[in-house]
Amino acid sequence: MNEPLRTVRMVSLYHIKKVGFAAWKNRKWWSARKVIIWSNEHGAWWRPEGKGYTGDRADAWAVDFLTAWNYTQHCGPEKKINYCALPSQERGRAE
Image (cartoon, rainbow, N blue to C red; front, side):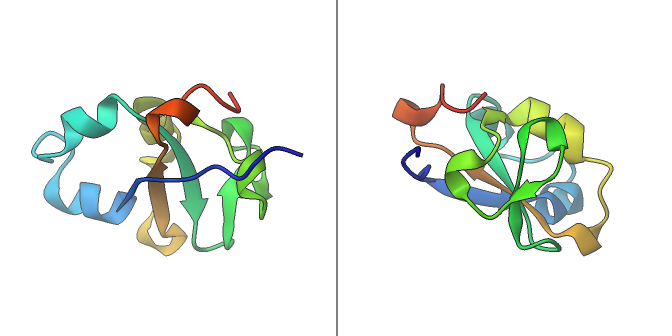
């Protein structure tokens, strides 16, 4: 079994949409990160390519932030999507 993925920062899709992606001041930092995606609606992490959910953080889809954004930007606020940045030593895991 994999060790659980640790996260260093989190931001919500709602926040990014509220301020506007182009105007979002932390866009550059996040764009250089791998993230895992949390769905508060399902109380679980996204599996690879958004194909289902998992309660096990170690099985979560670790993906570049911009890819995560492309998969989730269409989601409404009811989904309560959050992006969780991974520490740099874990950025290559679980692709």
